[in-house]
Length: 127
Image 1 (tube, rainbow, N blue to C red):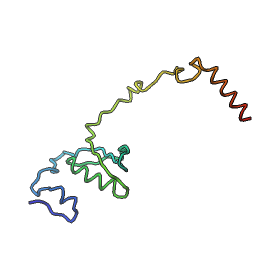
Image 2 (cartoon, one colour; image 1 turned 45 degrees about the vertical axis):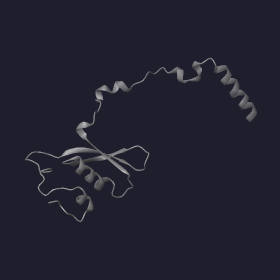
Image 3 (tube, helix red, strand yellow; image 1 turned 120 degrees about the vertical axis):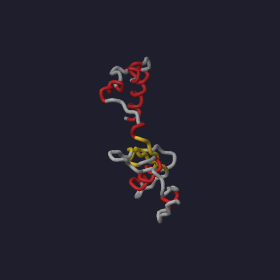
Image 4 (cartoon, rainbow, N blue to C red; image 1 turned 90 degrees about the vertical axis):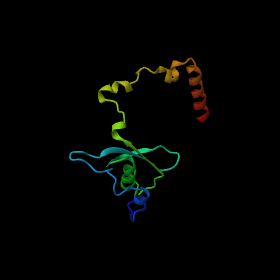
């Protein structure tokens, strides 16, 4: 027999009364899910927090209740925290860049004389 609730989200979930999902053994814990929301269609999803839930479906329900009650949201993602791959802080040197990036500056090119002449012409015209 399906659970019937005043909350239509619970009814839509088609949860059986006899289901064993969500029942924990002693010392067991729900999994942690990271929650990402999308405020408008076409923009990036943004991490808003995490929830503890017995399944991904219930994590969506919990995330909706926790993070989108007051704000506009068009889409939610939930991802098991254990499935998120992170870098170690000790490996922060992979983000360092070279200090000498002269190729980004116009001084490194042979057109610097033209640039300076253009600036002088503009300065004379604006004066």
